[in-house]
Image 1 (cartoon, rainbow, N blue to C red):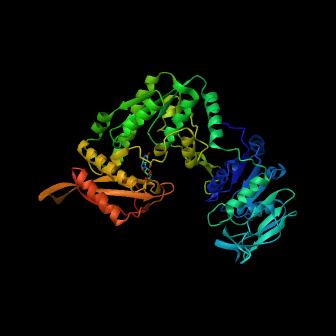
Image 2 (image 1 turned 90 degrees about the vertical axis):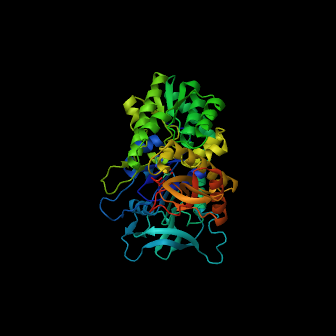
Image 3 (image 1 turned 30 degrees about the horizontal axis):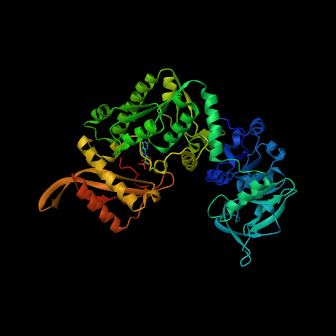
Length: 523
Ligand code: XMP
């Protein structure tokens, strides 16, 4: 989806682990930017992209090494401000007539301190309060170092192992720093980016209100009068995509909500009521509980569960999508981190593209084209767009919920009886978390019902019921996670409530495994 009217900043990626953070910092400043691997930045690309400024990222390669990556010479002839970071600084110096030497005792990894020299607009406000030490903390991660700066550049900061930690050619607005201003360990890094975009003339025209208008125009242009179908899961991404597309094309959009019988308490009603009644969207509520639960009968193996659910989901979606008749597009809530091309050094010069998580190859199978209105957004921007579109805050802040649903929170055999007990226990647990004001501090929380019965005593009588495990984790992206440190009081109160309010459970445990070595879900 082209949104050409924004001022655009181009980040040329040389493979740093933290390139995405540069984009985050800039988007927070209402600057639209895109990350592109150095291999795909050709002179033609530069002309079409028309960046207002360029950032050269860090990266693991070594400039003096033959075949190490370079941006095209053309970037330096565009007449736009350029900021080089770490490898980006070194490649800039090398290409503009300076010199870079291999490591040998000049490496700096982690915290370092730079001494400022002279006055530089890029560092405005940067050295405030430095009178005491004369130094500012930055984060370094480099083996090589610049040994001679390029003609036209001056030095504005040094660190013990980087004599040219901050350099600039103020006439051309070329800036180069050895450290990483995008990480939190460079406390004044955000200020440096703010100064850079101000110097480059950005007006901060990337806002969610603006994005909404332009995305709507782009959807209308792409879709014309064709029909669009959208798989609605009730998760944030598909919900925001659906509301945005509905605003653009109204009843040309039909959503399909598949109820596989593995949803949480009240979830199906909540999603259907909101989208059908509140938003007036054409919505197919595919109640396929019997189909899914029938197919899962007797299945205990986690992988077989997942495969069974995945295959049936596609069949059901396809069946109901066919009812829409003549749909030409499938809408998906693909996000920007899913589409950023990552730089591959081991796999030769071609860029590897992270695999898209589209619905199991459905678009090709059904001959549909994709509408992906969130392709340019990060997760928190999707939430901001959701707020802009008027989705209720409780919906926007929801914890992630996996496609296979409660099936992977029910180790062992899945029965309707166990699912009902699990739903009730989960509802009590989430209610507890909300009552204690902890919901937004937790990435994901849920109950798993364990395939064990234990002996208990309630009201002088023996019980023989299921044990359950509470799970709550903090995480940034679900890739790693830590268990949430609830107080003992909270855990005790929650266990009492679950045992009192949920017949079928007589023992509650708390899962204190991190990821790794555990995973967030139990299966
Ligand atoms: P794990 O258990 O792998 O989960 O640590 C990481 C995150 O991914 C979610 N998850 C899934 N989401 N389909 C999904 O849509 C799946 O099959 C699936 N498996 C795990 C999980 O809830 C957590 O947020």
